[in-house]
Image (cartoon, rainbow, N blue to C red):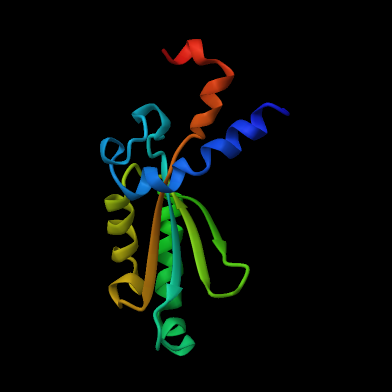
Length: 135
C-alpha cells in the first residue's frame, strides 16, 4: 500500500490533461487514459432560476429520473452536500449519451439547470500492480 499511494499521486496531474484534449495532442500515452465506463453529472440551478420554478416541475422530474434508475441508466444519485443541486452517476459510455438523457428530463427541457459532465473510468495506475497482464 505504501508503494501504491505515491504511484497514484504521481498520476494525478495526468488526469486533467487526459480529459482536456485527445491523447495524441496532450502527449499522454493512450494506456494512461481510461475507457469511459460512466459519466458523472453535476446539476445546479441556472442563475436567476427560483426554487419555485424548479418545484413546479419536481413531481415530473422525480418520475422521469426514477424511470431512468429502474431502466439502469442512473447508477447512483445524490443531493449535493451544499444543497445546490444533485449529482448523478450515469451508466453510459459517452458524454453525448449523458447529455441526451439529462436534456430529455423535465427540468432539462425547461432549461432551468446547468450541467457539468465528467466522463469517468477505471483507475489506470492500478495497472502497475500487474504490468504483465496489460501488455
